[in-house]
Image 1 (cartoon, rainbow, N blue to C red):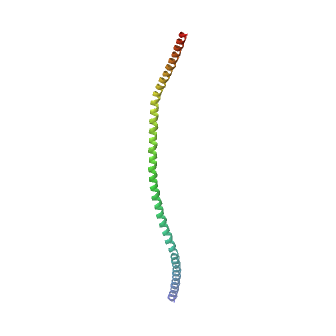
Image 2: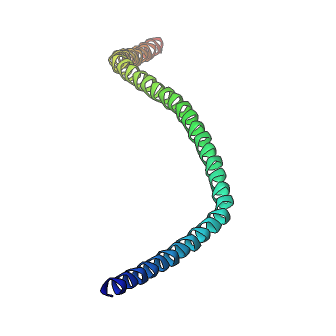
Image 3: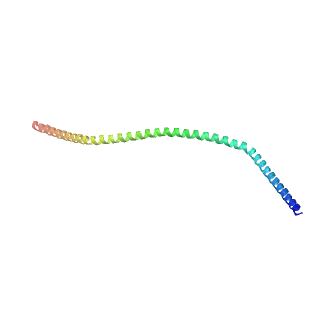
Length: 139
């Protein structure tokens, strides 16, 4: 009889175990159905988001390419401006050297003109005094 009770208890335990497994499997099945419904609802939204992301990525690449082209164009412009700055610097240096050289020449010319004016003034002065002497002699 102990064997029969043991078999009955084991059978009851097995039935309870099977019932628990069946209930767990049903819950898992319900959860999987819920996940499937959620995925079906979310899939179109994900596809739309993915499509928008692709479009945004394409536009971003276009903008980056455009910025790179414009950056290269401005690089050429700034290189030209830099070359122009060097040219102005060389011109300024040349003008300064020329002015320095001409300064000495101008000083010499100024001295010559000053001497010439002094000679002219003396000559006129002597000429006037000669005329006055002649007038005095005539009188």
